[in-house]
Image (cartoon, rainbow, N blue to C red; front, side, top):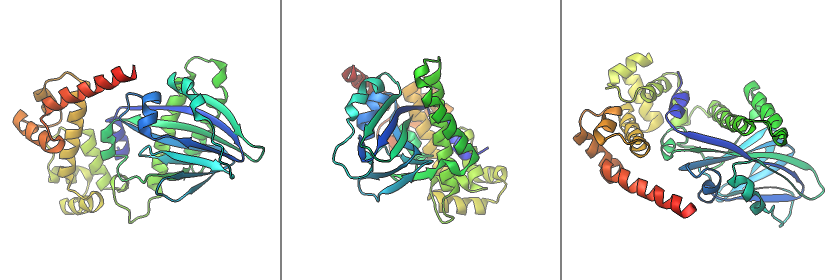
Length: 329
């Protein structure tokens, strides 16, 4: 049992590879922010994580307010907040005309393009992971606006890259299920990237991923995600994590900045918010699903977290979603 797997099971995920580019230096392309891209490629996602895998050649990536990141073959650069960014190789003011990709992106297809000058070739495969907003409180928490990992540094990552390269090369074959396979590979690539990033975190780092990596505290975090409705106490959690109450409490606060039970309370409310929007279960039933024994206690906690009672939250958020869907249509 590991915390990352348990957290990702609790979040609805969508993923895809949407662009296979071959660029000859000099070249430059710009990717818009998630709020502009999500309605096109994944309209049901509240959060869009963008990533680019360099399979051949060199590139540089940048997002506003951060240092440039140099990329070579096997590197994947990730933008966890879905910020607008650019990639390039060589000096040019001429941008790749991304608007011509829109028809294929809107159909959920993989767009393939060649662009640039007459110099060195860079091949890049672009994708996204779409998820619910409450992922920001778990595996997306604390990630920098931009980071890179070399997937070839592990056998699993190298295998995933090889599978992706073969998959995109066969995209014109019209073989049934090809896009579904690429979607699963995109999700697998993202998870492997997170695992590699966790492995490379320095010992002094704190945050959700650092907590998940910790042998004892990570076990406790996994237990909270696996069974959030259980009436956990600190002694129960420490016993099942194989550590003492003092060590668990101190280490959890050091890494996460809050106690295990405070984290659990926040996670329960995020799960409750999801159920309110995705099911028609009554408020009391939702409260029981996430571990509350009374509707009144649940209403008070929910109001503190979201600024309104659960019934109003459901009504207003569903009305907002319907309005967006009508606008997009």
